[in-house]
Amino acid sequence: MTARRDRLGLAALGLAALALLLDALGEPGFRVVGAAPGWGLPIALVGGLGAWLGWRGLRAFRDIVVLLGGVALAASCAWVAVHGGAAGGGFWAFVLAIWALAWRAIDALAGQRSLDRNRQRAIDLLVPAAFGLWLVFLWEVLVTGFAVPQVLLPPPSAIAERLLGSLPVLWADFRQTFLKAVLAGYALGCGAGFLVAVLVDRVPFLQRGLLPLGNFASALPIVGVAPIMVMWLGFDWPSKAAVAVIMTFFPMLTNTVAGLGAAQRIDLELLQSYGAGYWQTLVKLRLPAALPFIFNALKINSTLALIGAIVAEFFGTPTVGMGFRISTEVGRMSLDMVWAEIVVAALAGSAFFGIIALAEKSFTFWHPSYRRRA
Image 1 (cartoon, rainbow, N blue to C red):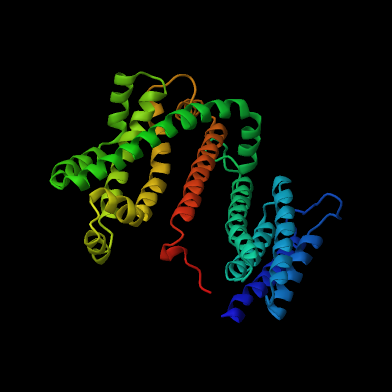
Image 2 (image 1 turned 135 degrees about the horizontal axis):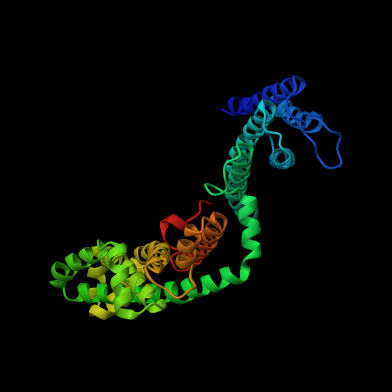
């Protein structure tokens, strides 16, 4: 398998040679600041890496680091070239060669295992980071190389420039949507779902009455509920928080009810033999057993609340907010600002999800999914 994968290095060498041939036939030049004009330096780099990989393979972690460094340098050369107008056949052959080497490097990095916990954690973080940066590079190269109009899809460089130039506006939108509507709706929806789940567990006949109603409420379309909430609660953030409550209530309810029923029967009978009542059994056994289910709902709701609040802002809001900014900038054909808002929302949602995942790991370290092999 390793030998088969390392053939990607030889493929990169062949593509680099093809790029050199096309360049010799008159393809656009390749210039790097401080280097001689032409394709020589970057193609020699890719070809050398391909030959080395095909001959030696990736035998150690340092080999992967060297390969990643070479891929990063070659990708930066391609980035400079595509912005200088080099997008002919030789350029795309060069990009394919970099792609082959990047694939092999990330694949080898993902297969690394270390007994050192800190080193393994660094590897686990580096794999998605390298893959994400590679996708950004491909996005930039493809959009710029094929001259895609920015009104359809702006390159990441334009989005980053707009994001850095609009930080006060983006912060005001983030504060209005996330810090007010999302957090308030998330807390109320999850809290209400948890309390109702305990009530349903305590009074069993409510499972036949409340659960179908909760299922009905979760199926309500946001585009239908949001205008009603705006009419009832006004244009400010409480109406968006209400939509987030509706979206987060049912996942918490169903997951908590399922979790409360996950305790082992033998454990329940043991506590009952000790004379434990309902609340003692709930606190000491059933709630701890339900924690994985509860955290599962919390993680799901972290994204549902954000989506609900942003969509609700499309139907009426003060002149601030992520949803308001997205809808108005789309009307103005300012797609770079729309993507900047999307980046902020994605980062906020990912950070929120990550915080909950860290809390889950702290509270449910005993769960089999977190047990490490010795």
